Image 1 (spheres, rainbow, N blue to C red):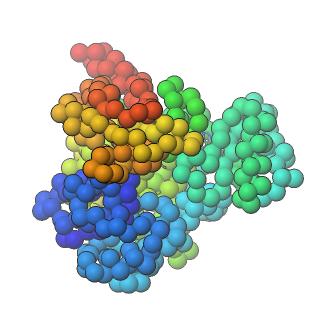
Image 2 (image 1 turned 90 degrees about the vertical axis):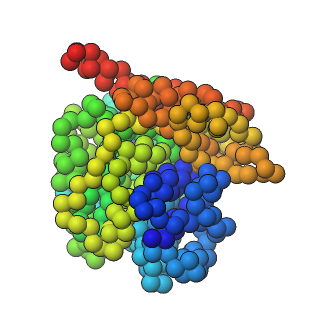
Length: 430
Ligand code: AMP
Ligand code: GLY
């Protein structure tokens, strides 16, 4: 099987790494890929934004399957264009990807499908703002949640107890011509569950937890994700089944009823609140960096799963198999991320990190005169595995610390709490 993966980030490197582990291994191509991906696939210099060139490349290659990684080409209609050209595509149409592209439309779909989510109001003008804030937070005693309605790479959301800060963020989005979604605050731990769908059926992957804030102890601004782990030893029994039953399947059914079949990954971002599970957000693609840990644990064939979904032929009742090992990833970010990032800094020590037993996923790297340099906000994602979260986490951190990137930063507390709870549980049982 010949597979073309569109994208250039850590998620795409992880997807390609996992595809390369299938038996028999597929022939792998990436557009545009990155220096890490280039070790596993043939990279083609086609930008993520150039849909015409993607279609030309996929046809020239006669790819059996095209997998679209990032949200931007999906929302721009890359899957539609490729399908019109006769290709088999894993990734939703622009209409279906609108679930991620518009938070207000996602709310409408959830309401129609009876999917539990935070109460929300959409605000399109400054004059509606104060009343909107009063409506979602009537007692004024919970944090305010203010979201830009469109795509914002995980950075359009402000959660703050400071009403003035909430207003300022909303006004900056409105003044730029956007609309704003104000939401009820959801407490409780967050879970990311990726569900593969062929437009009708749903096959869940393993749940993971992402760390969205830039700094340890969940301080600092929101980012695209600074680290992740899987499995979740603390998660309630049957969580995955409940999410499929109450969230993913009803959403896929509602879209299908509207003539908008969703073929690809329905990323369910969830909060397990005291009042039950709630959807925080939907995305229309694999999450980054969660993919790095989820796919690390997948032992069932991966390419055939994506291919079956792309053809609308997922087998009823498919159950995937998972390694019992834990996986943890730590993201190494550029100076300034998630604000204005500095790029072009030299990266050294990847070999040393891999000799420790980690593997290093490239997220924002480039080759310049033969040296590997930073080329984005999130630069590398270092993955460690082990028999439990503590051993996986220690390895991922040791690997991260073996790598030098001037001005970089990373979190040191990824999976720390879950690992400690898991170890405490093990001691209690022994
Ligand atoms: P989103 O882009 O909608 O996923 O939001 C990014 C992050 O902001 C989420 O992962 C949460 O950590 C936080 N967040 C979003 N919505 C809420 C909410 N209603 N209550 C609490 N935190 C939220
Ligand atoms: N890690 C969050 C995301 O991919 O949206």
